[in-house]
Image (cartoon, rainbow over all chains, first blue to last red; front, side, top):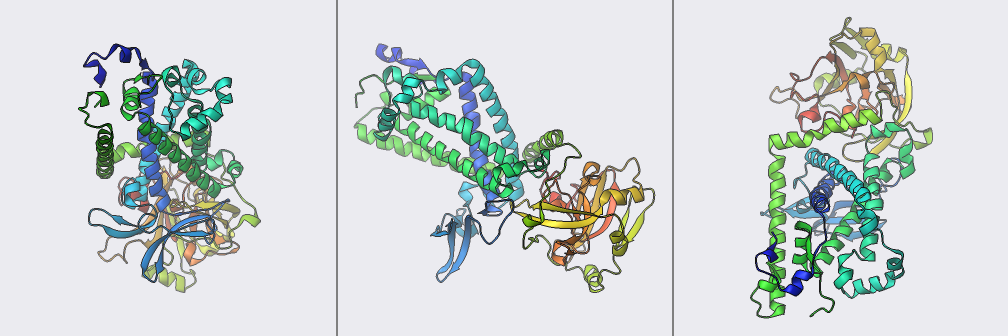
Length: 283
Length: 271
């Protein structure tokens, strides 16, 4: 895996090699990749069984705040997405899409390429979802314990006061696609810190609690607790929104990896070793 | 692999081809993994592994929400204007239609299997028994919910009448509605369901004959349906004909304890 080991690196480069990610973090990261991908995609299979979202205790079928349907239009059947009273034609992706190599048109909310399994198969989607939900939660709890007791949380995840003061500069750097070099590249930057903290202590707890709130048996843990989330259909909505937030995080995360030296980043998450960009970038 | 060791003709071109290679790799990895997931979904032993999670869920949920824990009940103001009906809306079976024509006067609920004193009850007899009224939320496996007011006889009351034998482990509900064609090939596709004794004796498990203060409509399972309030909608068998106490459902129909269970859904539907 470690390619730089094959040929003796230039001395300057060797000095810049830095062991950035410890084994537990790397391992848990890739378990997360597997679980989150499968959870998002099997979640869409489950969503497709009733492609509408509501606020409240039950479903006001006439009045979802979000719905993805196929509508009969003069030109044929067209995919339509309605969000808070606004209507969008989402033909080809949402509501209607082509399936398989034959390119047959189907009416379904999310397209086959976005769901696990690819067919409209609710029971199988649930099996994938609940299995990997357990794995994801166990992995998440292990990560939290590790972060707390190894010092990872304090050392790497919590931003310092000075970093928080300089958040304006960090935002500017991100917008200009300027990446930290030298010593600064050895630490998560402050925006990165905040993004990870929002995910770890905001989106993930929310997606889990809202998911559990949809279980009719867990409803009975303490009758009425689901009303704290606004009711079961609100919980379903919050589960969807939190998952969307996680997807957004993944997209930004992948984008940052791609533009900040993809092989270097990939290697560091596989082997732990990261080559710190020199202070003065050659670019 | 490392950009440093690539014969670089021009930085720009190298970047483009690297990007193209990366995109190509991502697309093929994506396509392969999707095809892989579909293949695994059709692999019986892999699906067994996936489904093993339901035992974990059941055990965990039983621990945090005990055998007697109550599902949330709601107020009259929460009752939906129209309670959604799903699954069979009007059974096509001739036997059922004849009973319906007679206003269910000839209908009887058979209660038997592993019991001391098998019995049959008319609708009038069931209505004369102690009743429970509850406003609960019906959660469908598809994702929607509907709140309705149910009145019926607690299943526990019927069980006390027929006295289950010590080896009875499950209560099986047999229904009037065929799910697949009007049994063209003679194959039985009538709806059925099963629950364990924890749910059978649960206070909120009632056999309902009223919805929202009206006799149970045909769409919702007339003359009698089960309410299993801590599980998903498909457990709440409609058009009840027969209740049978059994030790195991391994040899009954598909062997999974219910019509939807035989079609791949979890027997434990508390999640």
